[in-house]
Length: 379
Image (tube, rainbow, N blue to C red):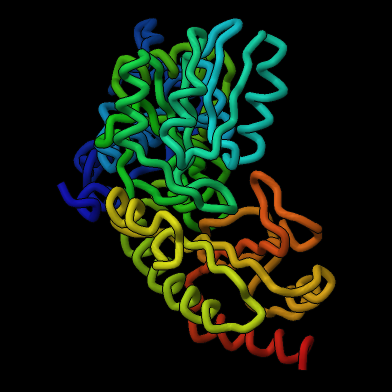
């Protein structure tokens, strides 16, 4: 089934809702006359913390896009990430994780889970021998994010899945960057996928949400335990907005990528930029791997400025169409000077690194914006 078909029609039956072309918003906490049912099975609802008709359709679509058996929506990306991790971890477990994962996910493993005796070995993620060497007899989980935050390092999903299965270790990946339009980790042998739906799945910067996708038995258990007991369920209104975003996901992702490729070419030729970090750009060290396991890349990239930090900040303040903000995945272009103030590179960051989300404004407009800002600051 093509992604466009899934996004526009899959899982929907207008006859259930008086022929409405848009799925109704079931903005309710309670379903009455349900004959004591609390299982949350389709067609028999009791309580929205367990299941909701609007949310259920979104879950069906995301599961189909990822080619997974089931999906469950959460009230935030971190709700989905922490639930997926907790599904596989127990007291004194060990985790192998990519060092450059989303910072709150790293903190959850390194700080919060330490109170339960959980330990973590952080790896770069690009060296298979390093990953396998980090596995010990207490390892329960390998946590991936490919491409990863800021540096956009790409992990070889098929080979890592093979290593994990050999050692009977579970694998979870954050697939927010690529979305299921450009990457399907479950087809590479990964056990579970998580998303921040606040990003591309929502697409309009107006929801906070997350999704877990995987085998039906695993996802059902996550819903019964981590989601239901922690209470991190997506609201019906956010589900309805997410459904709206999913309908245009394929066309939006293609446009984000087209704009990003044009901006990568622009930055590559800009004298003040010494490095463009974008998985689908041919200077990326893992360009061939990215092309092999992804069918495209999103609008998120980083560039490394060859300028002092104060000049970087001045250029960013002059930009009109790049707003300064920490998120990404919406229609708008964003910029974050996360490495501008550093005096040296670190494991997860480079001196002078600026992350950009290339939105839908049009590459010509964005290039003109940068030209104006650079000329105004540097002359």
